[in-house]
Amino acid sequence: MRIGVISDIHANLPALVAALSALRNLEVDRIYCCGDIVGCGPWPAESIDMLRHEAVRCVRGNHDDAVLHLARYRHPGAEEDLRMLSWTAAQLDASQRAYLADLPRWHCEGHLTLAHGSLRSPLEQIEYVLDVEAARGSFDQLDTWIGLLGHAHIQSGFVQDRHGVSTLPVGEACIPLDAESHYLINPGSVGLPRDNDARAAYVWLDLGARSLSFGRAAYDVASVARAMRDLGFDTLCRFAPQEAE
Image (cartoon, rainbow, N blue to C red; front, side, top):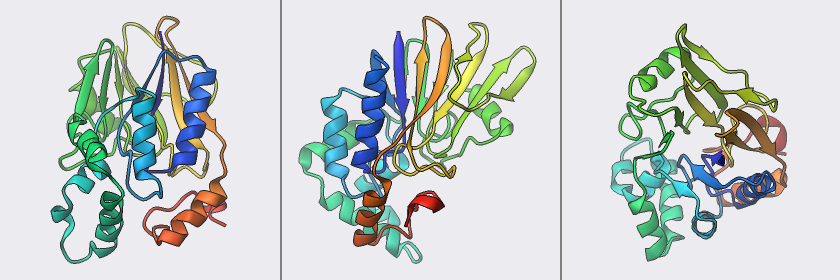
């Protein structure tokens, strides 16, 4: 079975459309999302509706959770975050809010485990998995072949084999997966990458062929950046430096 993985859409509908189109062209059988559907971008309602229409299986991200619990952000120093989250919440109807509320903190299915931050801290005291040490903490909690994580906004991968934990090479080349090893994969961010490449990021895996490929999809980044500036959210959630002009 071929699966596609996305994460951290952040209400960037054009980026989501580009990523889903790329995955459909790869003829994936199922698509998963590691959370943060909303927050920062101009199209929260439309992004939720597209994921529902495409039957993408999602877990809850910290921005998804924050939109449902605005009171947690009513403290000094968080005024701009609260303004963005409040605006986002106001764009959602009851069914869209219910969709976010029903998203699980993690999800296990077959060979896969999904979470947003890390497997040892999906939402509470959320953790970035950016290095081998943090990966070890999630591998300790991994009961399936592959763990899929978001939150970092950077494409990355880690393998745990008989030699220990090490990083995977990130690129568009096909990476073989060993049936006796375990993996943690971050597809990067669809809507707000933090690796100086503004294209929508995704991953696709061929479980039968035991292979993994990182991918990017181009879209009109400048128009989205302008829409975010118009809402006043660009200083909170910036794109890669070169596409903000």
